[in-house]
Each structure stands twice: as C-alpha cells, then as structure tokens.
Image 1 (spheres, rainbow, N blue to C red):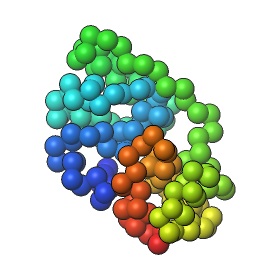
Image 2: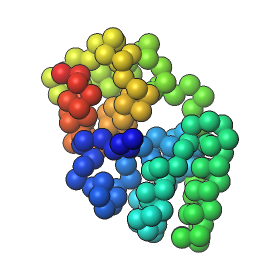
Image 3: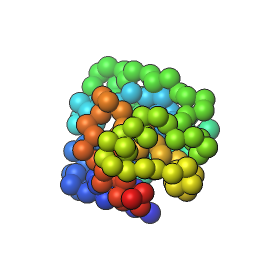
Image 4: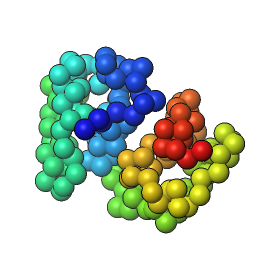
Length: 150
C-alpha cells in the first residue's frame, strides 16, 4: 500500500516533512507532534509512524502511547495533547466544509457533493487540512487534481 500522495513526492524519500497519513493518525489519536519532534526521530522511526496501524480503538491507544514515549525519549519533554473530534468533518461525507469549498472556489474549482462522498476519509482530511488559513496551501490544487476533482 502506498501511504503517500503524489503531491508529497518531493519529500517522502527523506521524510523531512510529516506526511498526511501521519497527520491523520495524529488527529485520530490526539497527539500534537511538532516538526521539531519529527526531526528528532531517525528515518526508521519516521517510517514506522507512517506504517503503524492506527484505526481500531486498540491501535489508536497503542499508537498514542508509543508516540508519547517516543517524544519523551527523543526530546525530554512530553508531546501536547490534541482534542479528538467525536465527529470529525472528514468522516462526514454529507457536507463539504465551507473552508474547503471556499479554497476550491479560489482555485477555480467547484467540488460537488457526489465527488466529496466518493473521497476516502483520508482524502477529505487532506483537503480540510490544506484549506485551513494557517496551513501552507500550495498543495491544495495538486491534491484536487490528484483526487480527480477537476
């Protein structure tokens, strides 16, 4: 299984940035991982963070505990917690978030609800993350193209 998106290809070999699959897992398990933490991990640990399963309640709990331990081991400070959304927007295929629609319109794209429904939760997560004003949004349009939304 390929855990990376095409728009991430410029950094996946080195894993110098936190890939979207890991960002998804962080939001799932409620851990705030800073890029500075990520850079403290060697390539094997980074790859394990990509590959390790984080789907079932047991896996989520194990991923969270393991990640907390990693951060403490490598930085001597604990990771901060993220609140875990009970009904995250990426799991809702019945409504396109306003921020995603606005960002799409800025790029000249209209996302139809049927297209949104056909995306995976991870793809919806990516578009939500890439449409936030605080995020560097250069990958929004490449993601839109990769997900065949235009």
